[in-house]
Image (cartoon, rainbow, N blue to C red):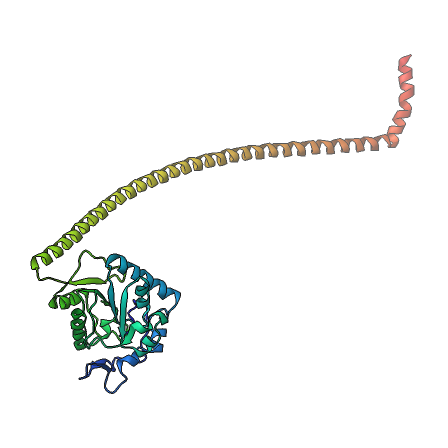
Length: 353
């Protein structure tokens, strides 16, 4: 089928449109619309280069990604034999093989299979999940595949997958409707119901989030409904208890945050009031200083006025003295003064006798 790599972002496929949706033929092979190319041709070089977010090829990104998944599968599930159903270019097949597992991969895309690494080229092949599968496996992995398959073929694919194993690691996007080839998107509970019809139930103790957030492991049940109910109730109780404790923690955190915010607000108000008080005091002092300065300026202005008056009085006196000196000089230079001066000498002498 299509690449089972978790989609980062894909643009609209140029091959399939809203009026050209995949349908199922009598032969069981999905065909786009009527008379269009086979499904295999949908997942060609263009698809893997442009519709998987990061170009889907054997590069560092995808090798690191699938190595981490293979290590988790080996550590948490420990299968000896594995089928990667919808293996695309066999990148996960290669990493599982390097972990020492006897792994096989199938995909409907002839192009993808032709790009498989040399180390696992003989371990991958072109096949449809809608057709019966060969072999028996400890684990079947099918990741981001079945949402690409029309409803009727998807039901047959589930039957075929469940027929060759007792354990399935399953992931199918529950909300990616933007991908044009996602024609059979279902929620996790819908897939769980379909698996339950086939005697497979979610392993509630296995956390498959190393693959995708919605991934799950389904295991064949021995038919003991008591154990199934017990496991689901245990999981439900754990989730509810955790949820209640988290809610209590959140409420307590919100309460403490509210108290802290109230305390901070009170401190801020006190600081604001103190700042306002200090500002008012400083403003009053500044105003008082201005008033004192004004008084001093007024006093200085009075003294300056008095000084200027005294200056004018002295200037007037100086002018009067100069006028008197000029008048005296004029008098001394007059004939009368000279005559009086000549007569004054004999008069003084006569008095002296």
